[in-house]
Image (cartoon, rainbow, N blue to C red):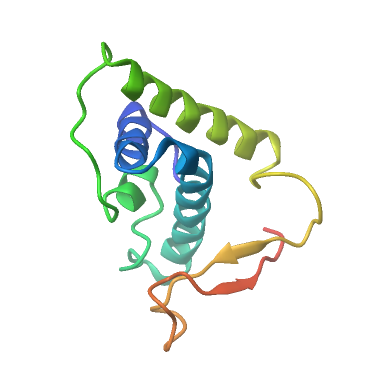
Length: 129
């Protein structure tokens, strides 16, 4: 995944705001995983994946419905931002993987690389970097 900037965090939080709060952690994990996969696809293909973006969190979040950002005085926005940061820290602590368990995790792939894919949400075996 590309280096994370403040705009990336805000973009993911805005996506979370468009979802029920119970779904925030899972949605943040998915966005992070997909942005990471998109960055690998970008490095291989030399262009952005139409389903997953350019490898940045903002690029991936921009492909999802977002709620307008009300600002840092809104406690709900701050809660979404906290979930975003927390899930990103979990991803970094897991050496680029979310959660614990088996070393062989699933990752999202770009459907442009695999014709017949379902809009970038096909599962493929993850291979070490």
